[in-house]
Length: 495
Image (cartoon, rainbow, N blue to C red; front, side, top):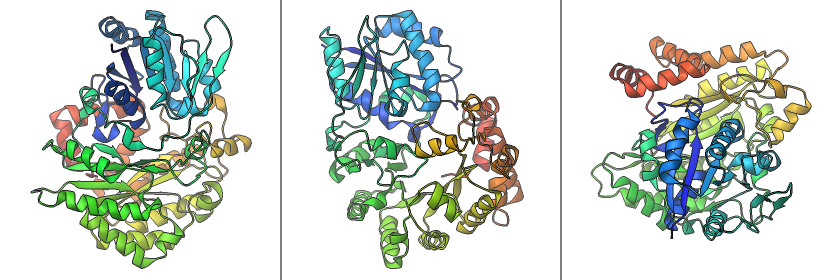
C-alpha cells in the first residue's frame, strides 16, 4: 500500500509562478533524489515548487484536498528557510495531521533552529536517502516516527527532542534510482535544456565559504564518492533518447579529485558518442590545483581526453584573482594566477570553453584585491562568468570569521537576492562600490573582446539582477514572449 507523499522545493528568481524553474540543469539533486527514492519504493509522490510570490493557502488547499498527503518533505538552504517555514505553517493550518519533515543544507547545519519551528515535526541532519524510506514506512504503519538515523524528532505533547545519531555516508550511489524527471517537467520552462546527471557526491576541499567542510563532519565514512560508470551511462542514455536533448551537464564538485576515474569517464563518453549522428555535448566542473596545473603534460592529457569525450565546457571556481584572498581567506586549493592563465590558454587551444565562477565583496577584500580579480579574469578570456557577491551563509567558517570581524549585522542580512546584493561593510570597498563593480564587471572584462552593444547588455542584465521584481520580469519576458525570446537569443551567451 503506497503512502501519499508531497515534496516541495522553492526558488527566489523564477520564470513564472506556473513554471518557475528555468531549465533541466536547475533540478536540485537533494529533494529530487528523495522524491525519486520514495516513488521508486512504490509510494505516491507529487511535487510542488514555491516562489516568494506563490499564494500559499490558495495553492496548498486544492493540492491537499486532491493528494491528501500523510507526509510532506520540505527542503531549504538558509536563504530559503523563511519561505519554507511559511509553507510548513500553511500546511499545518490547513491540515495539522500531516507529518512535516525538513531536510537540506539548513536543517543539516542549523538543526536546532529548524526543529524549533512549531510547524516542523522532524529534521533530517545529513543524507536522507535511506532514512526517508524508514520514515515513510513508520508513518504508513501508523506509528509515531522514532529511532531513525539522521533524523531529529519532536515528541508529541512534550518539549523533548529525539536526536538520533547519523548513519555513515551512503557509499553505494548506484543504489539510488535515476532522478524521476517527469515529476519536475511540469515546473520547468525548458526541461530539455542542459539536463544534469549526478556523477558523484562530496568535495575533498575545505573552502571556508562553502558548506562542504561542515557537511563532511556530519557522518563517518568517505565523503567524496562516485557512481559507477555503467550506472551513470545508463542514465545518460535514458535522458538522451529524447531528441530535444543535445547537452548534458555532469554534476560533480570536481572531476579532478580522481584522475583515474576522469580518464575512464572520458573513454566511456567517447564510446557513447560513437556512431551518433549528432554527438551529445557535455559540461563538467574542475577545481584547479597547483599540483595538477603545474604538470603541462597532465593538463594536455586531460584536455585531450575531454575533447574526445565531447566535453565542451569546463566550470572553474576561481572565486578571487587575489592569491592572498584565495589562500588566506577562502582556503582555496593552492595555485598561482600564472597557473590558471596557463590552463585557460591550453583549454582554448582545444576549443574547450571556460566558465569562471567569481566572488566579490569578500571578507578582508580590498579594492586592490578586487582589481586583481578583474585583471586575472580578463586575461583568462573566459567564455562566460558566473559572478556573485559574497553572502554570509550560517554554518560556514567564513560566516563565523565575518561575524567576529563585525563585517555585517544579523539584522541587515536579507534572505532575498543572496549573492546579488552587498552585505559586508569593508574598509575602502563600500557597499555602493561593490554594487557598482558588480554591474560593470563583464563590461570591463570583455572590453576589446566583445562589442560595445554586447557589453552594455551585460551591464543592463547585471543591474536587473539586483532588483527581484525586475529580474523576475526579465526572466518571464525572455522565456515566455516572442519579442523577449528574440532579444534573449540575440544578446545572450549560450553556455
